Each structure stands twice: as structure tokens, then as C-alpha cells.
Length: 205
Image 1 (cartoon, rainbow, N blue to C red):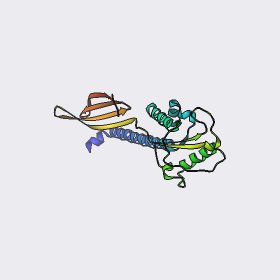
Image 2 (image 1 turned 90 degrees about the vertical axis):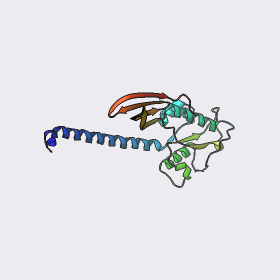
Image 3 (image 1 turned 135 degrees about the vertical axis):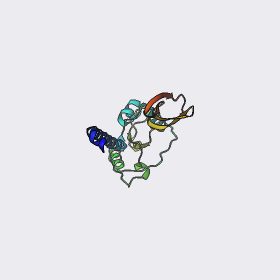
Image 4 (image 1 turned 45 degrees about the vertical axis):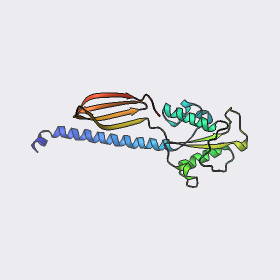
């Protein structure tokens, strides 16, 4: 009790700072959640954007690695003679393929249960694309135009890790951060950082 009476100002300051940090963290967490909810909504992407890594990266707010893999996969799907078949096919009534794309985008975002379950399942990104041209850029006949929907789960590029490192019979709490192929680890001796490890993934499969 005597300690509290002598140091109440310091303790009050510490309490206020702690509450501010917790409040800021909660605000940031909720803001980040809202941003993710927005990104999970169906996004309409043109055929031209799908062929551009930068276009996909900017439109979908994804990493270069994810955009590269996505552009490659979409290219394989849309290539002439592709044997990749859609998981599901459904029909909508609309005057134009663009109107159909708008309708599908809005209904997926709204979670319209009249659509197939696969179309409205929760994924990291949902892409809706009106297909009006073939791979050479020539306009398709009206009866061959369609709307493609891609449900995408991204490779997670940011990871925070925690564990224990044992060296010469001693245990060191370890905190790590990984982005893409690079990973950094900080080893602690008590509360004091006592070593750093940097790793790089040379081969992935």
C-alpha cells in the first residue's frame, strides 16, 4: 500500500498508457477486419486486368507472388483448348453480358442463397469477369459470351511466429516474422534480445 501511495503518479501514467495501447490495438484490429470484409466482397475484373500481374495486384490488393500465380492460373483456364472445366455452371437472365456480371457480383456480395453454394462460399477473394473476347482479343459471338467467377484463396504472405530455441541446454523464447521467402527470428534471454536469425527459403514445393 505504501508503494502505491508513493508511486501513484507513475502507476496512473502506466495504466493510462496501457489502456491507450489496448484501445489502439482494438481499433486497429476492427479496422483491419473491416478492410478484409471489403476485400472479401466480389470484385469485377476485366479480361485485360486478368492478363496483367500489376492489374490484378492493384485491383485485388494482393502481393506480386499471389498476382503472378493467379494470372498464370487464369491464363491456363481461359486458353484455347483448355480442358479445365468449371466446378459449377449457373444461368442468369440479363440483356447484356456486362449486366449479367453486375448482377452476379451484387448477388454474390449479398450472399444470395438462390445462387449455388460454391458461388457464395467465403474465400479470400472473389473475381467476376465478363468474357466478351477470345484470347486473341477478337469479339466473341453473343451466344459464346459469358461471366466467369473465380473463388480464390491466397497464399498467406505474412506470418508471426512464437516458439522456443534450445542451445547448449538453455531455452530461449523466440519470436519470428515471415514474409514471402524471408524469415527473421529474435531470440530472448529473459526480457532482453540475445540473438537474431535470418532465414531465406531457397527451394519451395
